[in-house]
Image (tube, rainbow, N blue to C red; front, side):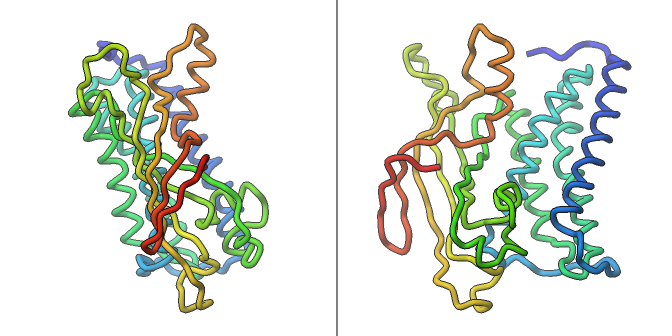
Length: 272
């Protein structure tokens, strides 16, 4: 897919205004969800790498990755050269999440995290690296969520509303690395579905507070293997439907899954 040869100034202005508006709206919303009611402090760092069995770090990496993927498409649409679009757009997620780290750093309750910054950068580089090497995303980071009973025991940290819990309740989240089989294995058979993917997932459960010693919980790591659908490969005759499918491509498609936890194997007929 070739990029336009000249920068479209009108589209560039639309992009810049849209980015500024999205950043503002997102930061105001996050401030209400995460920071409202907590005292402020001088900027500081904390070491939170041991919290939530690293589920929060995967959240940062996935958010940065998909923001970068969207950023690459946006900068190409404006008319930047392919290489500039990849670097400028691909780093969009890291730049945005760095602003959040600044908010964290000025919150007495939290603090800026070097682990978060590393996760943010990793997500951006995954998007950038694949775009440079393959001109597509053959390995995608994905997300799925199911409500859990744990949020009710600590709604302040795990969320009170369904929307808050989808963002805050790490017990209900699963992060996936989804591998497009046909693209990665260079399968030439036309009958092999180009949307079929193999997904490796990571989740954790029984976490009511960041650290196990806070509540002596029986928290566990969970590792999953499942099939997935690469919605970016689905093409219909309806452009609006294609846009919807591609917009929600960051969600793991519900499918049977094998789960490994503490030496035990479990089978889920449908996992989401």
